Length: 170
Image (cartoon, rainbow, N blue to C red; front, side, top):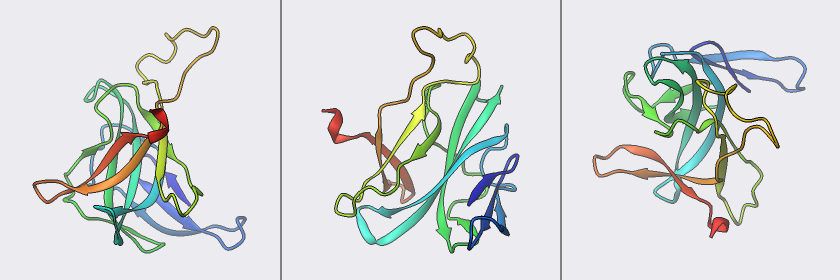
């Protein structure tokens, strides 16, 4: 289990889902620390479509702050051995999930059939700067378009998270 702990995340494990044991903490001096980290998600993806070369993605949303003019989100790419996450990038590298103001608390779906193998997520279309100014009738809030996730090596040799609308949106 990965839990938000202020401006870090903490990993726990349990054999019975009742008794939990601390494994490690990640985040000190890593990425952005402009506000609280929330809604962590941890998953593995192949790099450049190569199932023999997989990396772990740790995603966290960042609460309302003046630096980003609202809430935002960041991700880390690295290794996870079931106990500890090790970031592949330098401590100060900030990988922003989405540059818009309305993609927060994204959570990915698990248990998509193995033959499909996609990792899909949705984010809340809101920002902590204005949640109480939104209309409440006939409903309040909405989720983003579902996005398929992948990892690609960019021209500069850096592995980054890629998001594309799912094919079903056609």
